[in-house]
Image (cartoon, rainbow, N blue to C red):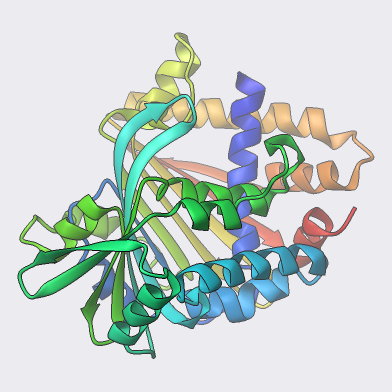
Length: 347
């Protein structure tokens, strides 16, 4: 289990680094304002989606055009089936409500606010036409929510390969749509903003339900100029996401109650920052010691490999800076674009 957890930590750092290996541009304050409109959520993610689709992904996947084409094809499938082109949105805020762990992973209900330079009512109308009438509606005040069956969409965007044969980005995209596997609700939130998510969460968004907590939003401020930001409070610890053993390691990881992640970039590097906060300082010290142990073990296991990918992971592990302040443990990592090219490049 220890090696699996170590690999997961290294992979998470790579994923965040890969998403942002491009020249830096400030994330607008408007995106954080968008996040404040979300209903009560355990976790919030904000993205500069305009940059992600139009600049970042093409640049980081320049070493693997086939992978970029697969992502483009999946986005085209969503556009064909729903009439909504995700690439037209400029900023996105996502609220996640965790329902607990299942055999297939984490059970969560998402709601997404997407804002762009297009009229939201026009987008809703296009989605209705694309569904060929296969939807029903609910009225909340003066708003109409359109509820679509996602089965056809899911079938289109998910890959027929076995999970073991899928590349990293195919698995990520499949996971996104798993959260909308029961229904997709859609409504116009304001002139240039649409709301998409499960019916329950969209109702919370446009109704009088409590908004996302200031404590969760504050996590987004730790790296205010980051390209992508994540903040989450975990009432049941990290066990919601990974299987933990009944041992000292499981207890240490289970003590994590807050997660924060951010991505920033400069001309040559992607800069990843992660923060995990535990209930008290002793637990944080144990977590720091555990991560440092993984770092030593990882350098030993990966450092002697002649495989180019493993050499990159070895450099990532070695370069990760692990620090602690009271009950917060920070992991900071800088990944050069040349290393990302090796990992995502065609084999």
